[in-house]
Image 1 (cartoon, rainbow, N blue to C red):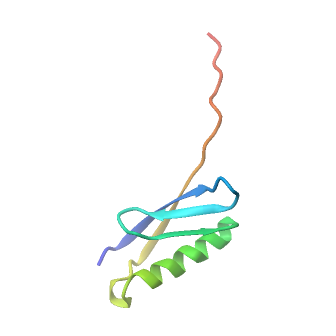
Image 2 (cartoon, rainbow, N blue to C red):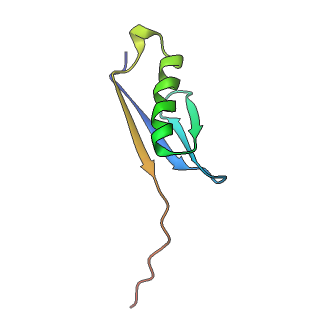
Length: 72
């Protein structure tokens, strides 16, 4: 049993958020960050047997920011 599972959470192009697990075939999406947390928990429960469910679920929010213009 893995002790933790990590998800990358990104803004979806069409709006809302998508979450992908690292090292596992788990993917989910939702409209808000609060909702994506619940969707991830549900997806993990569905993916693993009860005895194999990771104890820790980490969400890493990936954001894109515009480049910084630096003056020389």
